[in-house]
Every structure is written in C-alpha cells, then in structure tokens.
Length: 73
Image 1: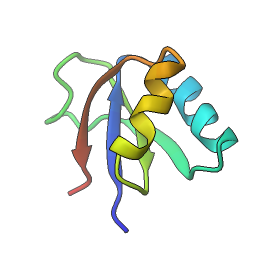
Image 2: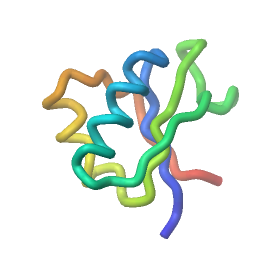
Image 3: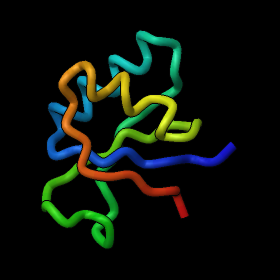
Image 4: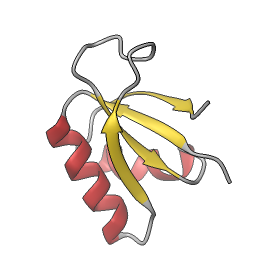
C-alpha cells in the first residue's frame, strides 16, 4: 500500500480535508507539497494510503478544492 498526495491550495484546506478523512475512518496526514509538484506556491498535500479516487468525492462534496494528485515517489 503506497502513499498518495492530494494537493490542495492552503493549510486550511489541508486541515479540513485531513480531519474529514479521519472522521470517516481514513488514515491521513498533512505535509507541504514537494516543490517540484507545487505549481501554485504555498501548497499543502493530504497524504492518504489508498487510491485518491476513493476519497476525492468525499473531499469535493465537503468543499475542499483539489489542485491535483500524485503518487509518493
């Protein structure tokens, strides 16, 4: 089971997303988006341990704006 990044635009969005996922029984944490993936500056990522498609609809339906996703390399 690999790690996957769900990139969001701010620390506030990341915290809300992480807390939402955790309240739904998902393992998630936050870290600054790696610079080579951060096209918007000051971005943060929610790290998940399942395929991002499994949680993206939950995040979007709760108002979390997702910039992109990436596998952890």
